[in-house]
Image (cartoon, rainbow, N blue to C red):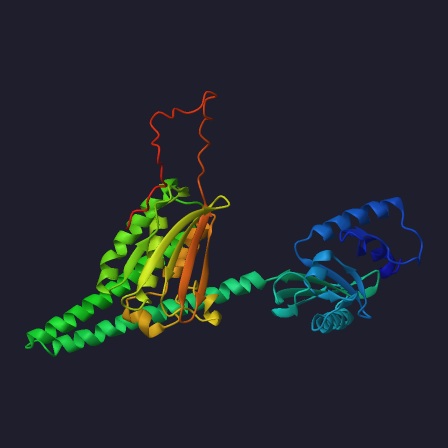
Length: 413
């Protein structure tokens, strides 16, 4: 039986609803037996469920079998194998034929392709990266190539991120280490000058603190990224989180002549890790204070919106340009590197905020306009208590109600 007849029952095609099915795709040749139909159905199911792409092409480059995953990955388009895989498949067939002339064992010839990039057939990714293993062989005496294609886009992205992270950490730690070395040399050369010793000693202390803070935040970020669940979950009062975060930044804000303004207590509650939530809000406040002009204010507001507790930190600072807004939550990304280092920033604060919110089932979003200021909003599921019992049928006791009731007054903070 010819190769196309053997493969005809398992050729995969798309139904109208987008699902895959086994079919012959051709009216030529004798109908397969019941046993062949059963085997073909099983093989078609295996191919359809395969997480990787599987393609069989003949010596004339025609696609004999292509499972749905191969089409999703974009290696088969318009019924044809895309380049450079088509060239690699032809090479594998030729190499197998050459090998067979010198070796009658009929062993297949394997060719492993490098990482290949294709425009994504669907989804939000602009392109995908695949690794292909191509086997040149023959079935029923006819040459063919079998391709096994794996999507390695995410693996490539993760490896790139890992390399970038290591490079960034090395660079960021190199700066304070180099500074400490220079300061130590200057200090040793100024042992007879008490004022110089004090100056260089304070500088060394500041650099050491900055390096220690960076290491601490790196450890915290690593734990957040690897955590499957929050380590300490409890009922947390949002107002207490706000107050503790403000208390942490009060002295820094006062030193910069910046006022932190709060709205009225909300009574909101959330389930989460109190320490992490305080850290996230403190990081936002620290950024707001660091990038706000002296004499301005930073405001913190809270509200309930659609079952979500929201905490917003607004500053009247320099703002963030649109091209930088998507990157501010990346590790070590700084809009103004000189200013960030001058204020002791590590470039990790907003990355920590992002991961704290993700671990709480929430998110952080940014609104900013250069020259106007920025608003960072934390949003996470609120803990809503059951509604109180209904008022008795005879109605509430009105004896204590005054005749001139007024709405409650907001207290200044």
